[in-house]
Length: 201
Image 1 (tube, helix red, strand yellow):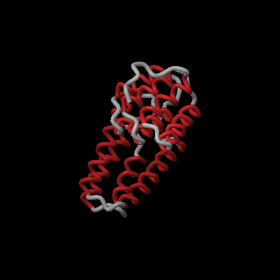
Image 2 (image 1 turned 180 degrees about the vertical axis):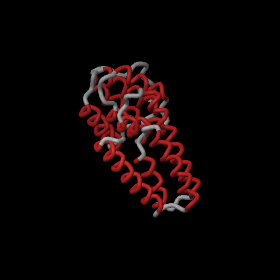
Image 3 (image 1 turned 120 degrees about the vertical axis):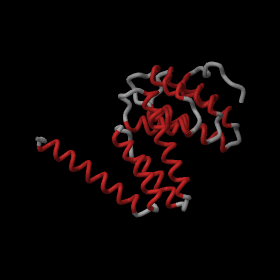
């Protein structure tokens, strides 16, 4: 027999799931809904974050993307969440898994995530991984961005340092610097040394 607390938790989980399903039902055609719901349910069973999957589906629907494209995007993100957990470990938080998936989808390898976890096993990697994906989105070559974040991690950079790195790189790019050069310059400012095996911009 379920305890009152466990029963309440199950009820709340069911209520949240029902609300999420309602959002999808109102936005997707039946075929796409069935496929997306399958992926969302799989993530829920595996204790992976489901909100990013629902968000991707809803964003696709808002942009009038084809059902096949929405399904593929959700499937790819679920695969990235699984890969992020494999790289970051079973104790990774939902926010770490979400940011890790974003980094993987940006083109970095699982090895980058594993190395970051090994470097900072007790610290949250959410902000470093978000900044890594953001640097790549701003045009920094993925290898350069990965080395910059790795150098910051080795220097025990704080979340504020990573945020400053992102902000200053953005400013340098707007001012005309190449994304790679901007990343190299700004990570030196934070760590006092360039990343290992500094690549040519």
